[in-house]
Length: 130
Image: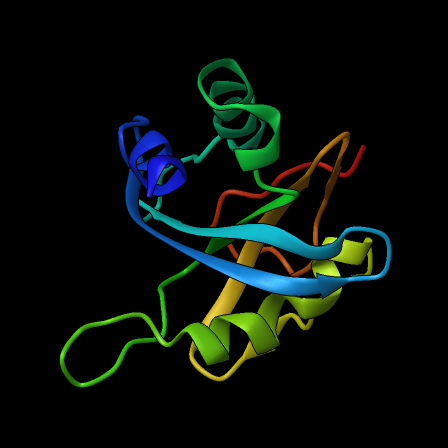
């Protein structure tokens, strides 16, 4: 998709997967789940700004979620259902779980705000809450 291509071309982004989640105002919201180079900073604000500068407003994700890694099938395809479970509340401004199976949320960027949703470790780069 255009959004996946837009995010994939950004420095530091390794993988991208999009999911749609229920949203009480919008009906459905786009959530971009991204992975980055391990132990390096992934600037979610810059990713969102890049999307806004390149894509039409309707294609800009409501939320970008930095995950440690994407849950995948045996053939290597992202498990969209698992990602939807992980990020469902984030599109509506709720904090998500710190860990859901093997996929840990490292940071969240929403349109207009930043939120930490997991405990920082010595090796993970954290976003500061705004």
